[in-house]
Length: 258
Image 1 (cartoon, rainbow, N blue to C red):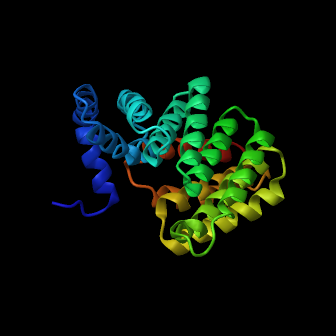
Image 2 (image 1 turned 90 degrees about the vertical axis):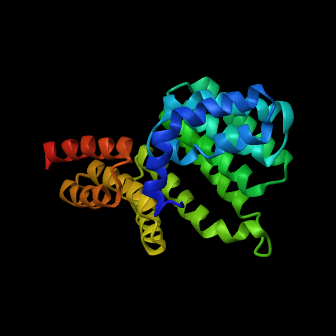
């Protein structure tokens, strides 16, 4: 029976994560390569939205290796290296994450998948952000935006461009905040928030609101920052544990000086 919504789907994945991870390993061992790769890809919502990084890492390691051995230079290889790099980055394994992100860019480029290449360059920027290398991150985000702009209106990938540009606004706004350019940051983060609200993307709206609250806090506008935090908390489901915890910490920082 199909899940009622995304939250239920993530909950089902969470309940079955050990079985899925084991299935990826067994499928790889017995050379059922497509099964291993598809199962590993299915873990993406769990690592992105619920923070199950330690749990899914073994499956992603197996799948990335299978993709390199059996589907090199493919979109699937690019997607799995992207997923692997994201997970490694969340776990603070910086050098390994950088290598996986580089592999994602190379695979997507070899496959001629422009959107995937841009997303992987974007991920390189996010990994730089984790090391507080805000100027370097901003360069990667600008590069990713330039690659996205190479997609023409007649291509299938063009349908996702508005969302991709909104994500670029969010990430560039975050980098600008880190560079101390708070006014420019706020403009971009407000635009990203408005886009995701209009599209009904509660998760991404909440993430953009969190970034906006950070910028407001750094500008000394703590009452307004707290209002953004409250709205972001209402938009997230209980499964979004890492993000809710981050918002709780941000709330304490704002309240301490409000």
